[in-house]
Image (cartoon, rainbow, N blue to C red; front, side, top):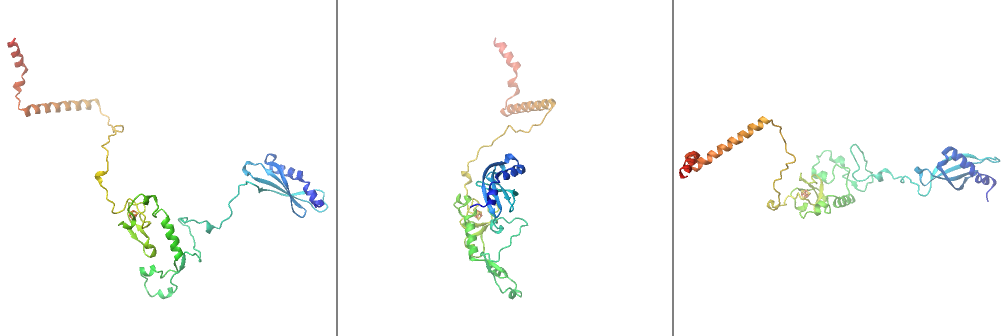
Length: 294
Ligand code: SF4
């Protein structure tokens, strides 16, 4: 059963609303939502927030009353999320938010000491100071404090195989020739080399990248194409994009005269080539012959 102070706090709904309207302005204060006791002599009245920027949020006006006091006082007002309020996502530690490929230029990402992708390498590093390491030594982990673990290799193999350079990549499914038989495929060392290598074809989209043996592309070294079977179109002459050079009327006349002279020369050549005498085509003689007949 509510005591006298709680009753005073509960009845102070109008006091809470009046203060809220003075602080927030009337248009942003909506309907009354209820009352809750927060503790001894303290309670909160809630009103709907009708601000378009805070859909689903509610105003909370916390009031208090002292022993033997007749008036309540307002302690604070604030916005609280209600049903349908847009809230920020829950906090996720940064190390859980980092995704593959996130490390950019200048970024530093320390690897956790207990990262399951790594296991201790050769622990007797001091013994190696007098000996020069060889590539074979590096390969088995000599001189490195940690090397790739079996789970690390499994995780890597699955990621590579299911990625853009695995057998299910669109570029690989479009061809029948696979990397395993390509001369540009260079296997990597270690156990991962059983399934993965590096593409060295400078014309391929995957040049210098790790590809699986069942990946493939149209740049396969042994692909043979019958060039004669490739249909080709005739020469296309685009007369909409001609380069033009302005010429004067005099130049046009000179050009035309030159062409006419060339044509005349050609006609002479034809007559000579035919072995005809110029007498044969003497028109004055033809006219005389016609008059005699008349
Ligand atoms: S050229 Fe194509 S087929 Fe050859 S290794 Fe590279 S990706 Fe594989």
